[in-house]
Image (cartoon, rainbow, N blue to C red; front, side, top):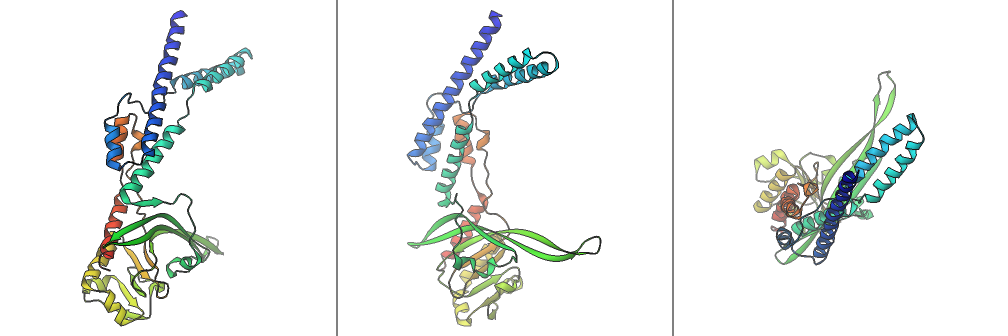
Length: 328
């Protein structure tokens, strides 16, 4: 019994020291983050970390005591109520020695958001602000007959030729009902929900321009047009409000930029003829992440996973969109 008692005491002590070092590292990294270093500086600090490397919580004792508690609970139900008391005591001890992992998870989430925002020069919208009424009236947000919901996911700024362009990346969810017939031959209404994504920019320098990959009726403006590129004409429906304005907009340089945009994210490019709101709409999310922060159990591993953290589709979107802005 003395041997077992010493082993338990040593286990408790080791777990306490390990978790204490982890909690101290969490606080130190949080203080470092508060200084708002550049991504490279932050990673360099983590790579050359002084002190303990611990960055995970040990709750072995909690799980062991909880398991024993369940065993005694079963014994209490089958054999004697005495074992129920032991079960409660063991479970209470387990709760006492358990350290929540929420602080560590919150830190990794803060690091994720900070690194991505700094790397891609964007700001994620946590509160999901609704669009104003003028933007919701955009023709490309009217595909649903029961619901049309647009959520801003992030906002960004592009600096081109000493000029700042504000843009938003959004998610558009719409639902529509269609009448169909079931197996019994009865007519029923069936609801379909679809998700699209895209880029919004207000005050686009040109108005009344539509280039649609899907040949949507809602993308059609008054004047049909064809560019000098035969392949482009075969792929995209082009229309505008004025031939003169369309010719002015669709220069060879801009045509190439639009082609690259459509290759990056196949969809629709539409500038409202009256408000000048530009919408580039497509059917895949640009916010897919390569995120392995959950695997980090030491400070050095955290630095390594932060280096690997990136959003390749968002980078592709920004490069294609910036190329168009450079032609304006």
